[in-house]
Length: 210
Image 1 (tube, one colour):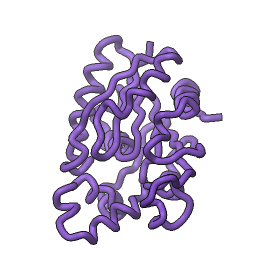
Image 2 (image 1 turned 180 degrees about the horizontal axis):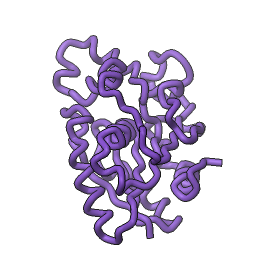
Image 3 (image 1 turned 180 degrees about the vertical axis):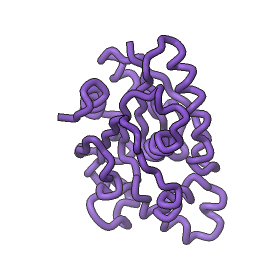
């Protein structure tokens, strides 16, 4: 049975990935979730916690560990692949609504005095911050991404372009992805839908959403 490590987004906990975990287990995966300090820490500063968990899970049966990350959790995956320290233990990866090119809302939050000084994870979602990290996947690890297209959140009105209420679709899609697709869901609920689990399981098994 393949292990899947689920990584939550900004200001959330492992509980936020419970629904997706339950769905994926019906497809035969053994799912695990971490609660990460993704509120007051830049996402790249908590990568080692994920590395440690990957190494522990891989040691259980000697098989590679798949990674699935929602929003900021998807950026953690990219940083992990760039770091290479656990690359040989990683299987396939799926990002859900991840602001790979940065978040317009995070940049807007940065204009509010003191806001990103307190919520430092948001600071690390700025386009310039992500570009500075040079998150390039030059491994052979396949990574797919799913973007939401339903802007059902109030803050979505401040985002230019098609978005899920938090992240613009164009920010999710990047050249190094093996596959990319969209679903008609919002940012806060995309990982709660069975349809998302179906596509995620398909990619983890085949390397394609189609």
